Image 1 (cartoon, rainbow, N blue to C red):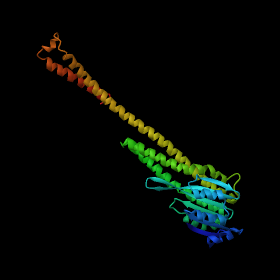
Image 2 (tube, rainbow, N blue to C red; image 1 turned 60 degrees about the horizontal axis):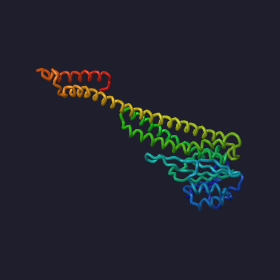
Image 3 (tube, helix red, strand yellow; image 1 turned 90 degrees about the vertical axis):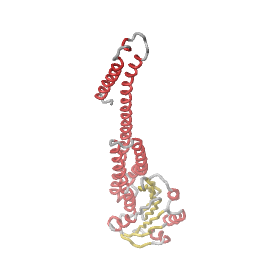
Length: 321
């Protein structure tokens, strides 16, 4: 679906265009066209391919969707794939924005994403001194908006990790804690799939041999690269902390089992003494003088319970009971 189709000249809006007029404005030297699509159909992409003279392989990737974040050069044009991330309930949902960039045009097509980029266009139009850099600045603005939306997701993941860590040491269900930690690890991995490939490729847009349409915007792309580096470092830290938290959780489970085993061993020792005494006096030998003693039975009980009490006190002092 077509969202916007606008021509700009010297950083200022020139006109809203019908699709059929795009090629006429693209042919002008001092004008560039910015088109935004949402969930584009193959027919719409084919129409845009004809108007902008897009490379067929880039169009094919855009039609298929579910591409890995990447930046590819096709002659004097770029094809950029950026993943969008949204938190819906407790789940992370990945979307995608495909961006075609030439010297005097930008075509963006977003998929599976409910958040639009109208604010990006409004921001760019408020800064004509930057928008006059042309398609390179528009590409930066779109990438920057997508990357900035990663930060709230990262903060939400950090908050969830802090909450789980508190539960680990305050008596929460250990099984539930491990399940939540693995679910959090899955979310971090999902976000890394959006961040890491883009971080590896965005270096093409600043420093070294940079596509001509991005030469004047290298500083801005370096800023996006810095943001991605920060996010990637934070995700690495979260992953390491999750691994440590899982180990701590398992260690606490082992300690709890050890405490239970101590208690069982202590009670077993006490009852073993009682069993030993009862076994000796229950053998019914003739030459056992205490069996004929008038006070033999109470003394046997006193000895059994006295020994058990002494053992109980010693185990209590040792922390086993």
